[in-house]
Length: 238
Image 1 (cartoon, rainbow, N blue to C red):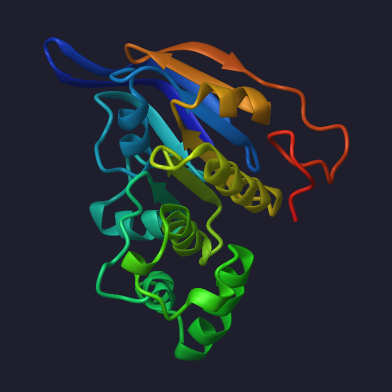
Image 2 (image 1 turned 45 degrees about the vertical axis):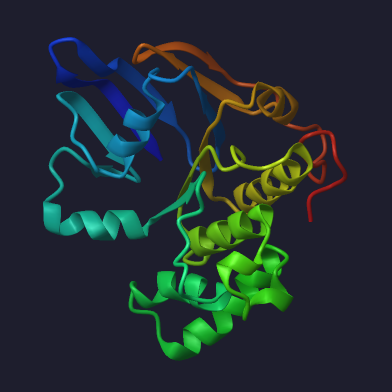
């Protein structure tokens, strides 16, 4: 799904974002991207969505070479990638339903398709009864669930979560992680940037660690023995 081949991103003479990074992320993997502030995590994500271009090296996402991709094709790339952010980035003047529907409208989905898909995804994230609410009427965890619903409603092949539990309490964070795990189980590749070491340890997924733009650890954890066993030491994710 994702290939970085000797990728460098240099911002200036004394500022290296990514330094000679080579790695592969397979279809359907769940990967944690970890490292201290300034390690290169944000640069990695910005490169993935072609917000910035590498100084050197090649990046391939879903078989598409981002180096040679025309700017006119970038919106189509981003439509195939779901993004979840720490600060939710919801449209404040729109209801929960309309926030999710917007992600379908910009891809040209028909009104009939929107009416079918939005309730389905709101049910998946546990917000079936709150489609008419405004973002300000929701808790932080609920707002993040709306963000996840919006990112996944098009069923992207790749979902990027940038510190999705950073503003949430531990119990609510577990619920968001359970949701991302369920999405991963549908076949979507999930890349999650996080500072939450405890969550990373409990999930036992692949960990890619960056430091000063360099890869310092790439550890693949054992998958769960039973297919229905949920993450973070909880009951099965359903």
